[in-house]
Image (tube, rainbow, N blue to C red):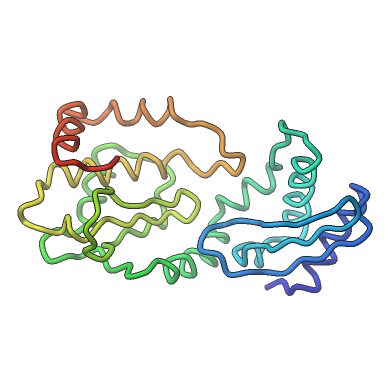
Length: 225
């Protein structure tokens, strides 16, 4: 794992290319992947997600270079293929997925009192053959009073489903569709540039039988999706 001294050395190298005389960086424990910075015209300080601590130096250098381009106003700057490949790699997931799960409050196992989420995922995979689901982890979140349908991290390939849905009174067909929606998001893969994948997502959802009827039921159930 990279330490703060090496991180600062990499940042300083790239910073000099963009006319920053003084640069410093340190790793921080954020729940999500993020980089924060403060700067003047001549110096810059960055707080870098510790999910990047295992990144190859050339990947981290390319990430910094893209960030500096964005800071300088290049709205079209995109992350390198090397960075994209690493974010989607088995190495990234193996190192960071366990840390991410530990940072989700109350994240539980997939086998609930009524429904087993792993069984639902297996059925949906057999039926729809969605890509990019290797290493997926799904689990129940605490039984908070919430109208949300859960959370999914495309980057970490982790899905959390609200625990209140683990109830015999909650329709299984609606739960299956909710899980499918999350799997559809993850199957699209992680885009570090945050580009819109709305059309591709809608195409996948359209493959689901009775999609419109199920969404109407979700509206009637006051579910926020």
